[in-house]
Structures are given as structure tokens and as C-alpha cells.
Amino acid sequence: MGTVVELRPRAKEEFTSSLGMIIFLASWAMMFSALFFVYGFVRTRAHVWPPPGAPALPIGLPALNTAIMLVSSFSFSSSLMALRAGRRGRFQALVAVTFALGALFLGLQIYVWSSLSQAGLHISSGIYGSVFYAFTTIHALHVAAGLLIMLWVFARSLRGTYSEHNHINVRLCAMFWHFVDAVWVLMFVTLYVL
Image 1 (cartoon, rainbow, N blue to C red):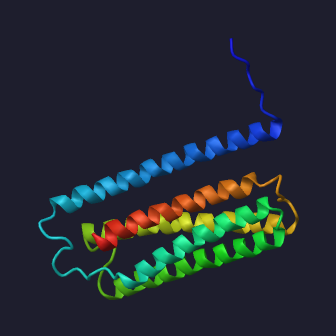
Image 2 (image 1 turned 45 degrees about the vertical axis):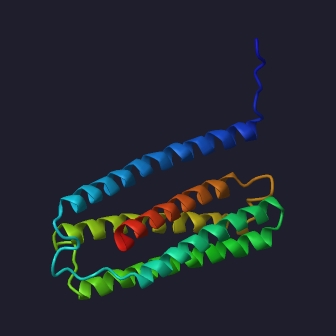
Image 3 (image 1 turned 90 degrees about the horizontal axis):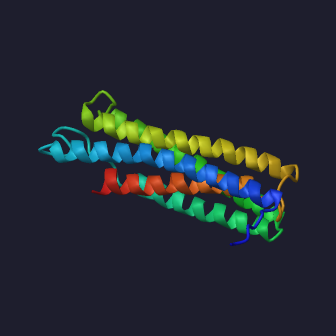
């Protein structure tokens, strides 16, 4: 008969919180997977993609946005490592950098939408426009939600809520942010490159 190891209350809470976030992200991964599946289905059924007369999607700004998201993931991971090492000032600075990068991503995404709209690609432009705007808008909403959560984490850090022994909320926020970044990379390759 094996022995049962009982978790300390904080460890149990952290495990439960992490498991909850994994389940939450898995549900969103299924939703994004469905969108990718629909996109693949529509694209394989089309004789020509993009449809004739549709403006070409830019590659430069979305590639820059991909780099921005990757750097933001690195800066958020670095902020968590700084917090675990007890370097609260560095933690706060890196969270602020991550927030600024996320806000820059959204600003550039709005610029891409505006440019494409002026070029004639609208959500009402058929399946091509609908798929593009659905994908990028749903992702942008997740980035905006991540930024709001990050702002909450930052505000709490200013009050001294987090320490090297208390950082579960920061870790959960980082998990969400990394998920949003990974989805963008897949979206960039799928929509803009292939």
C-alpha cells in the first residue's frame, strides 16, 4: 500500500489554480482549433486563394507583430524569474515592458485593419474578409484581455502583493499570455505566410 502525500495548503491552491488555467486554455485552444479547421476547409475548397480582386495581406507589419509578441513572452517570463529571485523592481519593470509591447501589438493590428479596409477588404467582402477579420479580431480581444489582467497584476505588485513566495497569479497570467502568443504565431503562419 502506497503512502498518500498531502500537499500544503498553498501548494494545493497553486496546483488547483494551475490545473484550472490549463483546462481554461484547453477550451480556448479547441475554439481556435475549430477556427483553423474552418479556415483550412474553406481554403482547400477555393479554386484560387486569395480570391481574385481581394487585396493581398501585408507581411511586414504582421511579421513585426510576431516579433513583438515573441519578445513580450520573453519579457514576461523574465519578469516571473525576477520575482522568484526576489527582485521586485525588475519584475515590475519587465511587466511594464510586456504591457507596452502588447499595447504596441494592438496598435499595429488596428493599423493593419485600417490599411486593409482602405484597400477594400472588409468583413463583408466574402469568406476571405470574414475569415481574416474573425481570426484577427478574436485574437486581438484575447490580447486586450491579457493586457487588462497584466494591468491588474502590475497594480497589485505596486501594493507589494507578490513576492518570491507568492506569485501564482503572475504565473497564471503568464500562462495566458504565452497561449495568446502561440496562437498568434500559428495565425501569422497560416494567414500571412502560407
